[in-house]
Image (cartoon, rainbow, N blue to C red; front, top):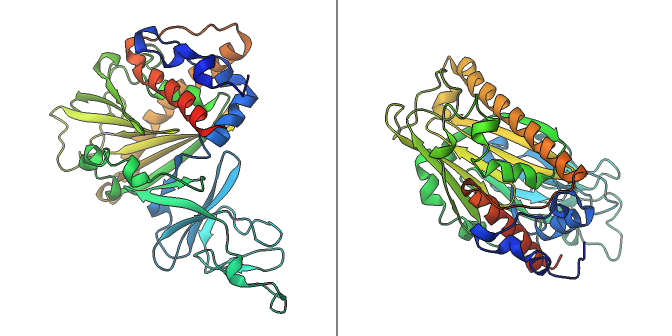
Length: 379
């Protein structure tokens, strides 16, 4: 790939009007150089969902995660604020925290440099006599962090955009689903042999529902029911029908949230939080997937479910919740299989990008987003 030429000039038909546009070239899914540009130009500048605030409810609670190879530490301070840091000690770089837990302070296992929950260096054995040393000069490297509707986002850029401004138009749309009142119920992780964009492409179009999900989703929410609308920082998909999207047809789920009914048509919404998270909201639950690339051909798929607080307190919670998990296990396995088949075809075939079907308008929008973001970043 010629990294000196703007991508919109190399692939002009990708960003043409929908009816005439071509899909992203094969290089976007299999070229290590292209992926390197995405790590810097997309994931180095975007707000990425890494968890939920209820995962760290108390002062000292923490967890770590990885975003395109960068380890990130999330911790709640004594002041209740959620912060993000690089967990690399400012002395010799050892990791000061891994996994999850609760600590009053983070102590480096190498030389016992100690950091407060706000990232400040509060102890450095044997350094007091150093003529050029001041603890205030050596806090953990901070990473931009924001909480929106209970979701924790991080941004690796030194000059991030405002998440609140980016998602301002989304707030009223998601308000009926009470996202801040949801509580994380299950997280399941898959390693898939496909480029991260392949799974996002798959998640933002309903064209495949009738074939790939013929026995799972199609009977509940057929392909023809879905509409879509792209926005600058997020995409919307929605369908209106009675019942829940959360369980397989014929199975009974939880009662709906206030303001919804299982007997009357309701709007079920998928929100793509660019670049790599798709959030689904139905009348009784939410779930979201996040794609974290490991390399150009391999990705981590993280699947999360959440239910309203009251649902988690029901005596029959575990038995009924299992129906939601089973439904998503079936659907996600179908999506993983077809995405890996597509990746093998792109890798080993002689693919010539084609035109889009009407249900693939968001795939077209996403392709344009990828090119424009990479060109704008200069990566």
